[in-house]
Structures are given as C-alpha cells and as structure tokens.
Image 1 (cartoon, rainbow, N blue to C red):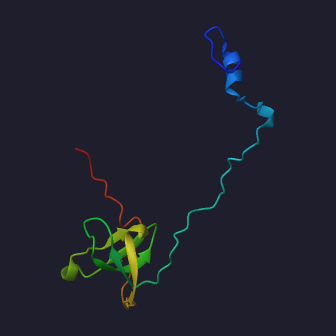
Image 2 (image 1 turned 180 degrees about the horizontal axis):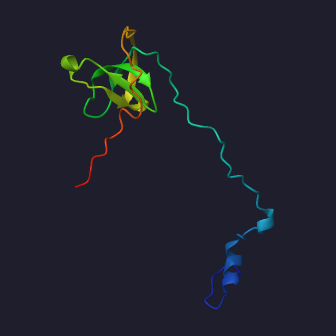
Image 3 (image 1 turned 30 degrees about the horizontal axis):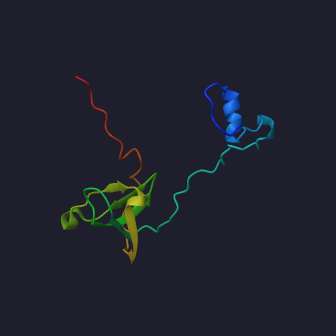
Length: 123
C-alpha cells in the first residue's frame, strides 16, 4: 500500500509512511536532575584594582574596586570624574592591571543594608 486512498483508515495511512512509534518500554530513560552547585562569583579581585564600567549611565568611566558584597562596590573621586559610590555587577566591568593603594579607606560600613532603599511613610 504505497498510495493514499480516501477509504483508508488512519492506521492504514500510518503504515504507508513507513514509520512506527516505538513502544514506551523501549525508550531510554533520561535523567533531568540538576547538580546542586551554587553560583560562584568567578573572578576574585584585590581591593584597589581599577575597573572600567561597560554599560549604563557611567559607561566608560574608570572606578576603583573597594569591596565584594552580593555585587561589587566601586567608587572614584566624585569631583574628578563624577562617579559616586556604586554597586556594579561584575559582568559589566573590565578589570585593568592598575592597582591603587586604598589601605587608608574604611569600607566596613558599606554592606547591602547601606545600599537598600529607605522606606518612607505613606501619606
């Protein structure tokens, strides 16, 4: 039965195509389990490394890496290049080989709570 006839049933038409679905017992079992590894931050920088910002309103500005929180904290002298104390995702920066001495800078007070939005009273 190589030709299609309107009087054929659906199963007869399937036989003419030459392909049959294998029974489910012969299909290989696939595993869908995922590994339970946590995401790592990848690159570990020493404090004082100079970074170049790649995206956003500060694109092209150079900043100094201060501390690693959930994302990186960086800053530069605001009067010099207009970059405030900011948090930057590491995928949006390039690390240069220039290091600046920041041993006299106290970065202990900068944590995730410092950068959290302040909730005001509702009127």
